[in-house]
Image (tube, rainbow, N blue to C red; front, side, top):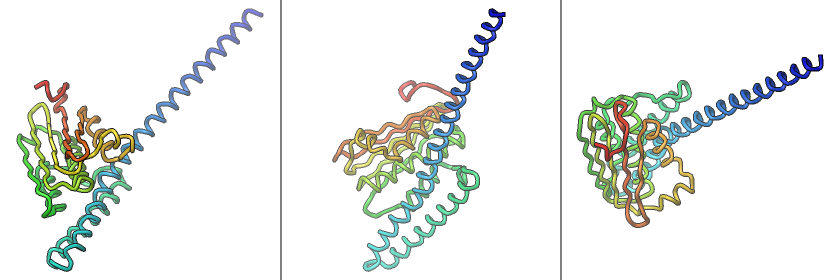
Amino acid sequence: MLAATGLEASLSRRIREAADSYHGFLLNQVHEAQEAERRRIARELHDRIGHGTSVAHQQLALSEAYRATDPARASAKIVVVQQAIQETMDNLRQMTSELHPQTPVKNLEKSLLDFLEAVGDDSVSIAFDVNGDESWVEPRVLDEAFLILRETVRNALTHGDPTIILLKVDIAPHELVARARDNGRGFDPAHARERGGVGLTSMRERAELLGGTVTVSSEPGGGCLVELYIPLRGHAGGPDDA
C-alpha cells in the first residue's frame, strides 16, 4: 500500500510538472505570436498610413511655399494632398476590416514612378531604372519590395535633404537587388538603431520575412546608400552567390 501510494504521488507530481511545463510553452508561443502580430501591424500603419500623412504634410508645405510666386503650382500640390489623404483613408478602411494591403502592386516600375511623381520636388533630381522581367517575382514580393523602396526614398526626402537620389532595381530569375543612393546629410546608422526608428526596422523586417536583407550605409555629411536583396523562387544564399 505504501509503495503504491508513493508511486501514485510520484506520477501525479510528474504529470503536474509536465502540464505546467506545457502550459508555459503554450503561453510563450501565444506571446511570440502576439509580438509578431504587433510588429506586423506597426509596419502596416507606418508604411501605409504614415506614408500618406507624410506626403500630405510635405506637399502642403510646398503649396504654401509656392502660393505667392506660383499659384498654379501651389494648386497642383493641393491636388496631390487630396489624393494622398484619400489613399490614406482607403488604406485605413482596408486595414481596419482585414489588415491587408488595399491593392497589391502589379507593376513595381509603374508603382514607383507614380510615387516619385507624386512626391516630386524641383529641388531634387531623381534617377530611376528597373532592369529585368518582373514576371519572375511573385506578387507578394513585388508588394513588399515596393513598400521598402518607397520608405527608402521617403526617408531620404524627409530626413536627408538631398539634391540627387539614384534608384536602381535589377531583377534576375533568382534574385531582386535594389540600390538607392542619395547625397543628403547622412546619419549614423548605429545611433538610428539606438533610437528605435520604425522606418528602418520595418524595412529590415519586411526583407527578412522574404529571406532577404536590407543594408544601410551612411555617415553624417556623406549621404546614404540602401541596398535591398531578396532571393526569388526559394533560392538561398546572398547577392554574391550568383
